[in-house]
Image (tube, rainbow, N blue to C red; front, side):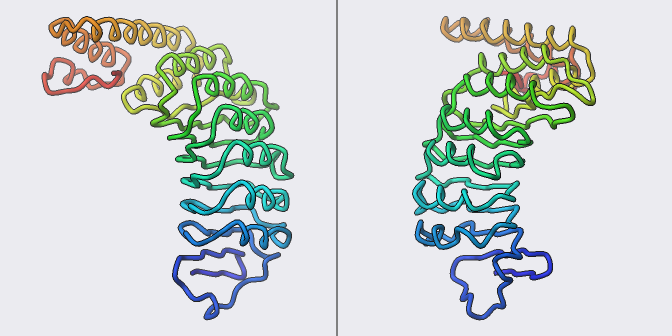
Length: 287
């Protein structure tokens, strides 16, 4: 455990005897890390409700025993919260997301980590996106979200107030997110036409094989090169549809030629070293 009374930080680690430490008063805490305290239960969360009004950052990753019942009570008593880490809290559901969306902290919440919360779906995430207008990062890898969340995120973020930040949305390894959903994000981002002071976009982090194309598109949107961004999006979509057809046909010679052309296109948009294009060992990064 590490405690700093001046800074208001408290990090608890499993197995330590807290009786040997001078703990800062609860009202002084601004950062509380309870991650990996596997024996923490809903009873502890209910006990914490009330005296932590100044808490800004709460880390509760890898807590297998906590449920909606305890966390929903606690969230209503944390009006200053801006960072919340719930990674791999496997029992949490959309009920917690709905309560968080209506909690006092919702308007200023900036970072929310929900990776491996495998019961969280579009319904819960949709409520968060609707109510948490200051959100800068949302981690959703290994959740049950679908393509619908991606499109909703872009539409909601573009209507944020002037000067609002872009939203970094992480959706690695989401089984229900497909290339078609990623394409929708690219298309809607290009329609947003962001400037330095208005119109936020979604900066997507997705399946690694698609990421270079997503990043290339995002850079062009941010610098206002919408025509080139649209060209990348349409080329990539055509490539994906062709890839599905070739894979289904089982024609390996056509499959290899398709990959070679994909590497050439990446080189053309500056996302791959041209020297790699004809290398038989290089892999196509837009698969």
